[in-house]
Amino acid sequence: MMSEPEVSAEHACSPQLGCKPKCCLMLSCWPAVLRRGGLRMMMMNGEEGLSFSQKTILAPMVRVGTLPMRLLALDYGADIVYCEELIDIKMAQCERVENDVLGTVDFVAPDERVMFRTCSKEKSRVVFQMGTADPERALVVAKLVENDVAAVDVNMGCPKEYSTKGGMGSALLSDPDKIEAILRTLVNGISKPVTCKIRILPTLEDTVSLVKRIENTGVAAIAVHGRMREERPRHPVHCDYIQAVAESVSIPVIANGGSSDIVKTFEDMEKFREATGASSVMLARAAMWNPSIFRQQGALSVEEVMEDYIRYAVRYDNNPFNTKYCLCQMLRDRVESPFGKRLHAAQTNEEICEVFGMTDFYNKTKAELEARRAALQTSCDPSDQPKLEDDVITMPVRFERRDYPPQISPKMFLLEWSRKEKLDQPVYETEQRTQDRAFQSTVIIDNKKYRSSLWEKSKKFAEQAAAVVCLRTLGLPEGRIGEEHSGLVNKRKRDGKKYTALEDSESAARKRHMSEVPQEEEEEEEMICRTKVVNGVCGQTTR
Image 1: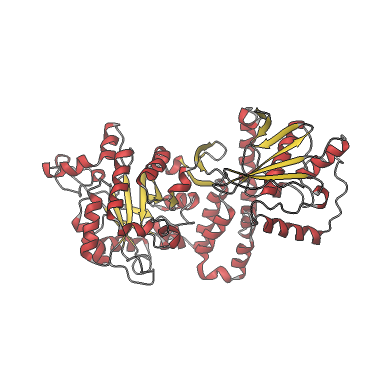
Image 2: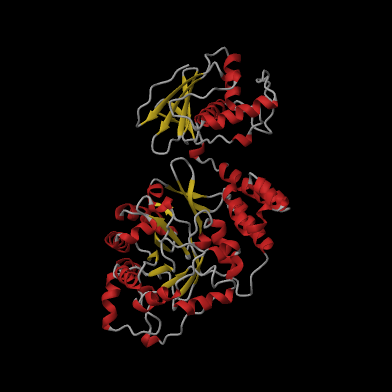
């Protein structure tokens, strides 16, 4: 870890306020200090802001910079970690949820996807990066996350279409006025440091001019990727541009883009910093391939690093496809080896652990999490109990296909129970939300309505979730694996081949237009299903 510069007490300037090390806090410094509204607010509150001087930093990387990778980089010696770029429109719809089972803070989208997960271990060193093209929306998101992160960053360097097509990322470099508006709004609106990450412009003069305008907004630091928008990793990094930027501003400049040309080892980070004259160094691909590059003692083997990564992925219930993606990046050219193919075939974190011979660790960790979840449930959290909302009984239930045997579903159990009790067959009314195309179903049986308060990604899963709510409220079995057989379902006649075909048709049905009603299984064909769109137009479908 790089050491902080020594500064005498009578001449000490705060790096958080943008002054270079060993410079005097003279009257000429004060205009820049006073412009930093957010940092001034932080000082008034007695908080110490995150310093960006003399740091080694994990760069923001889409699909890579999730919680396991960030924690791993911190373990290995990184001083600061950036999360992956998260789009403001999606984040603005999220709800902050404290996950007591995992010990995390989750920002959950309306479709129940976790968009951003963080924990206390990284709170003082994680920078939240957003993609935005709107000052007010950026402020909404920043206020949502500011109490759970150390700083907020605006992405102005990503050249990929998914970022630029909305006027975000490197597209902002063509609109300095908008850059200023976004950064000033954030600096004056939140209590945490604000930074931005840019790419260099075609000319040195234009690049220096832009960073001076950025400095005047009051940001705490600027990360500079030493390539132009049209350049890719195969092009050499322009250290001279970063050096010119560092010499032209008084705030810390973070050098980025040296993974291919310069940085291969821990010692190379200091060489890159010296070559650019920057305050700090930010690594992307070199850290993605082996995050132990941050270790001052030297990098570990990729095999050891991958196992360390898996431990965090399981501990914090990381999405298995994200886990697999990050592990494949570490494997690099070995991804086509027999071992790599086994990893690529894994579909769950459990299967990933099997590939690495970590099944015992997975089972132990899973048991600990389940025990914690059970302990929390015994506290009788009212949110997990059935509630009557208007005339509908609701519970927060999500249907997990893997929790049920291949030929069994809650809808089957509910249908068979209704027949046994000589009740009218269940009726399912399904709504689709236009903003994210998620589904929510209500099942009507015996003149009562049941619904999950959670939205599902498919109509079929939404109907299954509604059936689960009904069965649990009535105290009936639902067919879960390990549940005692109820004797209700005895008429399944599908063979394995037909079941596979039905599963394929289920997947295809999810992609059809919202007004279509997918074919149900043969035992459920008699059920009545109705579909409508929330805040949209769709004819009601009945069968």
